[in-house]
Image 1 (cartoon, rainbow, N blue to C red):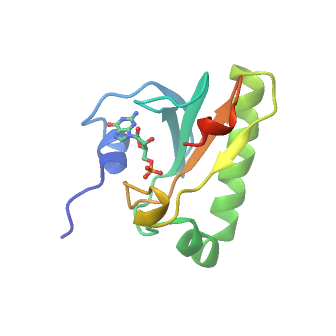
Image 2: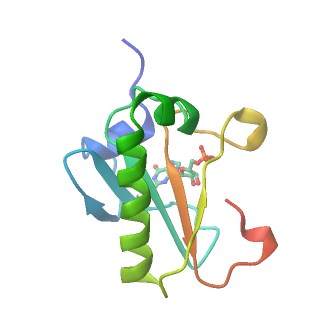
Length: 114
Ligand code: 5GP
């Protein structure tokens, strides 16, 4: 079996994280290296999708749930507007190959893309 991703280890509570939202299917927690005043990762609990392209093809309802969660989190923890970033592929900066959305809010400069 493949090594669990860091996000699966957070779901399993093997690694601590500041969890801000959790449902049966997704978990959201504060990024360990925030790039904006609010920087939360929204992650499907399943690790079967390595990036957003696979996720959109395999389970679009789950992707829609992540977008709804991002809005709820931005309304609760920031002014409501937010930026959603899906780094897709190593050359685009993806480091964890378990689909996830970066939810960024606060004072966002151009340099603050995750
Ligand atoms: P990627 O570069 O794959 O789009 O995003 C991975 C994100 O996961 C990075 O922003 C990184 O800071 C975050 N990250 C990596 N390991 C951990 C961890 O153990 N805890 C938390 N909270 N975030 C992590």
